[in-house]
Length: 257
Image 1 (cartoon, one colour):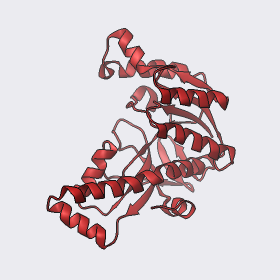
Image 2 (tube, one colour):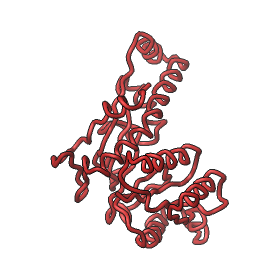
Image 3 (cartoon, one colour):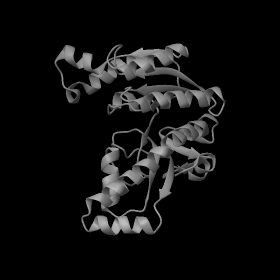
Image 4 (cartoon, one colour):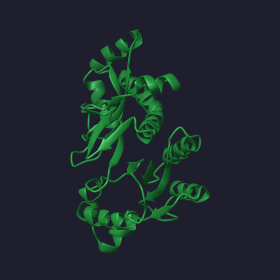
């Protein structure tokens, strides 16, 4: 499986994710290769994005750089005005490469139909299927406010419905124990310290499964155990609507907190 890796290179986690996935490829845990790293930043735009550039070049991974900031600035446009125009240019650049799937790995732009219609695009979202939309901070806040004891993360298809594309895979975790009950009881009474404690517990656990979820999902896709055809997800030839639960796989090979 040939992966087109989209990243903005915003933080250190973006570097770690690229390194860990490429390590998994080199160790044959993922049957494939990163055929292209696309980054919507230019050289010198940030130390972290430059680190990704250096890593890709050191590993001889093809690299395409196309800065959103420069593109919009030259045209005097806002992102909302220039999104499809930008994606059209991205498409013309990446179309020169041979790949099977686009993975959004810390890519900070919402991609338009210009990209998700012709290509299979998947993304990590820090919520279970059919649960919460939005940024990870909002997802956690909603989880706490609703008193939910289960949470997790999923890989899903990207389409016109933000964070609601067809789930590919997910890991489900649960909060248990007397301390958790106390935190929730106190949080419902308005105790900010208990809310903060729950927020940190959920974020730490969710964050700990993100890279294993990505690696195992890419592994299953690369080996044909999960397939995507015509924007539909299949496992062992059966169409799925809720994604593949890989909690046991991830947590048996990685200590889920």
